[in-house]
Length: 111
Length: 115
Image 1 (tube, chains in turn purple, cyan):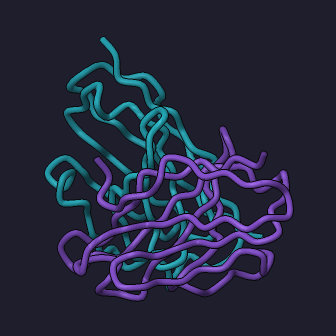
Image 2: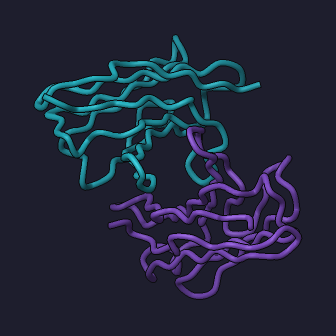
Image 3: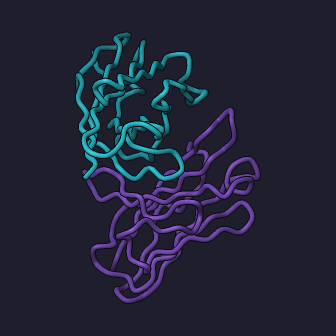
């Protein structure tokens, strides 16, 4: 049982937009602006896509954007492309005892 | 270009100690936290712990009693030890740079615990 709740899967057609949610509590997602998102293709290491809720590392397309409302963070991918099909994991800071928690991951299917 | 390369035993028996090392090539070793994260087969990621270059550590409370993370700044390496492993510790183990943004990752090591 992961600390953060993500949908098991989401899907969309090429060119469409999809949003992946990541729900926590006021002790993690809702309490800090330290949510990050990672893309993971099968058999590969995760890749940082978003950090500090909304920031994009250099090299990540601006089709990927992050946001947060209350205890739920979201990753939106616009202009879906076939290569976006992967698993996406959210992560949040959770204070000085628990430190870091992850979601269970969401499989993005590009139809 | 920063690269993290990790190694360690891939097959353990229950009650043995898992031992992995991650070497950092390129970039600065100082000024960063260095993390260990694992992923059981078909499941999500789990944060294990992290170490600052100075040796300061933070651990997942659920694993803290069994985990040791150490650093060797002379070799730009950091290591993970997890003792008394069980089948539940079977996972791909990753090393990574950073805390708030884990921007570089090792290639992953599959560790299987089986009698």
